[in-house]
Amino acid sequence: MGLSAERKKYLEDLCHQSRRKLIEILYKIQTGHPGGSLSSAEIIATLYFEKMNIDPANPKHESRDRFILGKGHAAPMLYIILAERGFFPKEDLESLRQLGSHLQGHPSADKTPGVELSTGPLGLGLSAGLGMALAAKLDKKDYYTYVLIGDGETQEGIIWETAMSAAKFKADNLIAILDKNGVQLDGTTEEIMPMGDIKGKWELFGWNVITINGHDVEAISDAVDMAKTVKGKPTLIIADTIKGKGVSFMEGKNTWHGKPIGTEDYNQALKELEGIING
Image (cartoon, rainbow, N blue to C red; front, top):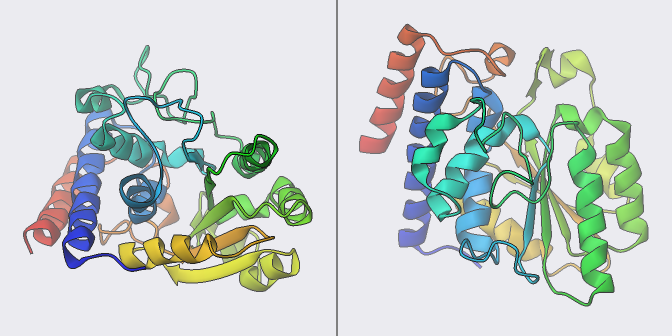
C-alpha cells in the first residue's frame, strides 16, 4: 500500500487543476453545482487514475470496475475527470448542461461514455451498485463496484434497505464512499436531519467501516486497498471532506450547493486556486 511521492503529487495537481476547470466552466454556463463537486475531487480522481480497472478505449468491457455517482449533482467533477481520463474530448466540457449536450446536469448512462448509471434521485446509486456487485458474483467476475454517496443522501430510506441487503448477501466487492462534508442543499446535516454516530450505524448494519481524510489521495488509495482485504462484508469508506473545498468563501456553505458564480466570486476563486497550483 501507499503511493509514491511522484504519483501522489500527480493526483494532487490533477485535483487542483480540476477545481480550477470546474470554476471556469460553471462560471461560463451560469449553472451547475460547485459545492459538492469541489468536495469530491480527490475521491473521484484517485479512483479513476489509481484504483479502478477501466479502459477508456473499451468502456464497456465486461471485467471493468464500475463507478456510480450516487450524489448525481456532483456530475461536473465526474465529467472533468472522465474527460481527463480520455473517455471523451475535453472540449465537450464547455457544453455542460446545454441543450443537446451529452453532458447533462446529472449523469446519463445512455449519453455519456464512462457513466455506468443515470443518477439524480438520491439513494438510487447504492441500490443499483449492490445489484452490479451481486451480478459480478453470479457471473464469477472479479470486478469491484464503487458508489460515491453524500451526507444528505444517507437520510434516504433506500440507503438503509440497501445497507441491510448488502450485508446479508456478503457483497464484499461493493465499496461505498461517503463524501461526508456535513452540508446539504438547505443547510448543515445537523440542522436538516442529524445522523448521529454514522460509523456506528453502518457497522451495526454489518459493514466494514474505514474513516479517512477525504482530501488525502494517499489515504483514499490505502482505504480502497484495505477494503479489498475484507471478505464476507461490504465496506463503507467515510471520507471527511469540506463542501466547496479550495475556495474559501464556498467552504462549508450550503448556499454554494448550486448557486451561479458571479464575476467577483469567479475572479476571487481563480486567484485562490491559482495560488494553490503555483504554490
